[in-house]
Image 1: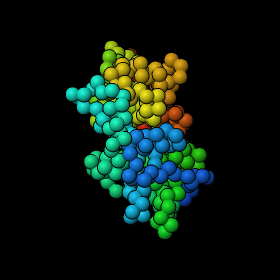
Image 2 (image 1 turned 120 degrees about the horizontal axis):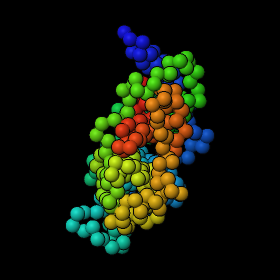
Image 3 (image 1 turned 45 degrees about the horizontal axis):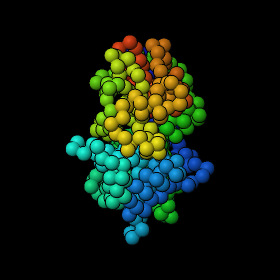
Image 4 (image 1 turned 90 degrees about the horizontal axis):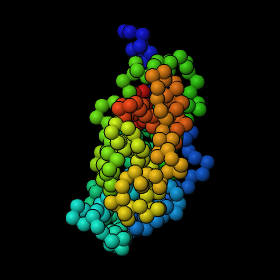
Length: 312
């Protein structure tokens, strides 16, 4: 076995051991408040409650059966918006869109979207099992459920696990000195992007169709900006979703402070980056995403999800 393969094996074993020895209980937030939405709420009310509380996710509650019935995330908010538009009525008036959102319940929308039931972890689960569950089901957040009390104690996210790892992992640091170029990590082929002359709704549909968390906007090979899944609450709050034909770059400019067009929210990789520096960058950049950009555009994207896929 080559030295590189030995390093990969040892690093994976070390990280797996660390995650196996830590429990979800250690990840519980100081404040256990979790936004709860009754399943009969109208979609318009769901959007407004999300914006009012500034939350990234919520749990749906069934008051008849006295149980939690699912999770609502910013990806669901995106799909709620996209579901209101059809190719033959893109010129909808604002009140028509609002009427549609008001006339559909969260429960009806979840059933029509074939949403599965509640996936959760318990405080006693180890972080290896919990992170594997997040990865297996392509989730970024999952409720921490106390089954005995039938209560949600918090939400576990990939971001929180990564931050916990960076703050608490104390094993042999030399395991993470391999250069990025020696690792098969992230997405470097068929990176999905759209051209800068596309509309906001076309960009949102691309995010939705390919289940992306970020979408580079390209003009002649140059990255002009990035639209993020995390922008969805602000797209709703600002009313941009009521103007779907707006140029996507104009929307991104309104969503970002300054002139960075979202590029300041990612980490940027270089040829000199190692696994260690990559993990540190991932833990500190706002969007938990690393891009490698050259004169031809984006040629590599690494996310926290990619990182845990590599280790697990």
